[in-house]
Every structure is written in structure tokens, then in C-alpha cells.
Image 1 (spheres, rainbow, N blue to C red):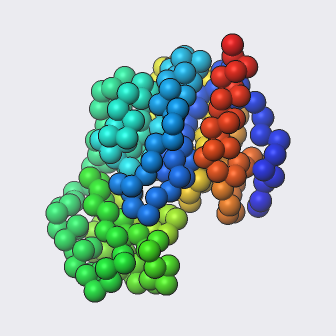
Image 2: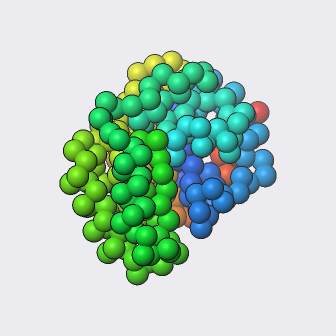
Length: 248
């Protein structure tokens, strides 16, 4: 289904706001380490945190340390590694979903499997691995085959398709589960969940928000379960700034 780009409702005063990072708050870069933080983003997030009584969270496939590197002063909660990590009030309260995993072995196996395809980027993650084929989209079948083999060799891990990438992550992790855990605790409990994201990994979270009385916002093109859509991170930024203006 393709929701319209217009008619996104105002941000409820009692919202719990969940924001993906790549492709949502920042434009997607050729490499994960090359993203550029837009001017004003840290201040915008800090003001939203105050406006919503602290009920603002980043929900990302990146790990928490990586997100902190880009947004060191972000005051809200962070669900990293698709929810395998969770940080509240600056304290890491969850680090794993209990998968017995030799990460070094997994990372070495992924790198060796694509050594003959230098256009494939191996992203080593603290709870898995991702292979990116953005530099050469024709390599998608290679990535999918390699990752399927790695999934077969690592019980407890599941494939997670993404934009121009495939990730292997713990089966117990998921952005919908991250929303569940956050919505059960202050300051998120009892609020209306609003989730904005751009990727396949965000679809379950947007569906979850809508099933619990809130709404999802798809950023960019592509099929989605979200009831609303915005064109790009700049459009989301304008919408969020509008919410801050209304709160004055």
C-alpha cells in the first residue's frame, strides 16, 4: 500500500516519539560511518525531549555506542542493534538476547565469503553482521546467498533485509519489541506511540505503533504499512519543528 505524502497529523501532546536514524533523521550515506548530522538536529531532539516529557527514543539497527558517537548529547532513550541493546537515562540496561555467538568467527566468515567482491561492505556489529551492496546493486544475489549460508551456520540468528543490505541479527531482537519494552516504563508508558522510519526493519515497529493507538510515518519511497508518508529527513525535520512551534 502507498499512503499519501500529505495529511500527516500533528504530533500529539501526549506522544511517545520513536525515531529511526539512517534515512530518517539523517540522509543515508555510501558508508555507515560517513553520515552527516544536519545542522540543528541535536538541538531539535533536545527540545522534543523537553516538549514530550522525555518520551523520545532513537530506535536503530546501529549499536548504541555508534549512535552516541554521532549524537553524544542526546538525552532520550536509545534502542540499538534492533532492540538487542537498550539505554535509559544514559544507562545501558540490556545488552543481548542470549544468543551464544562467536562474533569474531562470524565477522571473519562474512569477510572471507565476499573477499572477491570488494564493492560489498562488511559492517561488523556487536550483535551480528551486515553486508551492504549499495556500491554495486548487481551484487544483491551474492549477498543474499552468503547471508543465507551464514544464517544456516549460526542458530539463533535470523536474516534481516534492509535497504541495499542484508543483516544477520539475534532472533529475539526487533524494533517492535523495543517499542514494547519502552512503552512499559516511564516516561513512555500511557502515551500515544508515534514511529518514523524509512527501512524494512521499521515496518514491524510502525505496525506495532498503529496497533496500539498511534501512527507510523514512512520516510521516502517504497511499500509500507504506515498510514502516513514524508518525502525525506528534511520533511520530517520540518514537521517536528512545526510541533515545537505549536508547543510555544
